Length: 203
Image 1 (cartoon, rainbow, N blue to C red):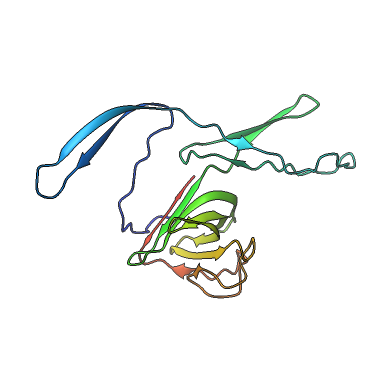
Image 2 (image 1 turned 90 degrees about the horizontal axis):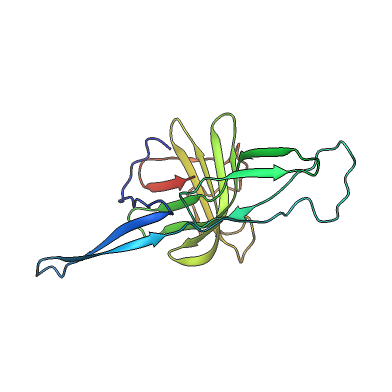
């Protein structure tokens, strides 16, 4: 979201295909720094899709809408995706596919450090509200779920994090929630005005 001040350096990830030079520089604080470089060949890892809906062998009345659900994972945070569906009658539909994204959050002055490992869904409303739900590591430990809410003008955010051992969705005691209210609807999530910190969403 525009206007959010960064309090930490940003790492520039290279594209996933190609040959790159990696340079490592070490210093002991006494002697002059020393460096060494190596050429690294990177190849893109393909996304892994699956179809979870409609259920296999399900029957639907002709002419009624049927939702197709095909989540996928992709380790490449810089990738973009297009979903192409070839139907039995030969028609093909293509559209942009959300996913392969990255959410990270750092709270200045604390050891709170969240990195998304999976994005489950993203919702954006016509009036500019957004919510993204997924799984994450916190301080390097896996097993957490999160929902990040946001709104522009002014920048407002709410981040809810909870242990997945508790439930697949928020509701119990959170590991972190900057607005401790029992409301998780995107229209009533009660965000907090952003005055500092570093939250990055790549898509």
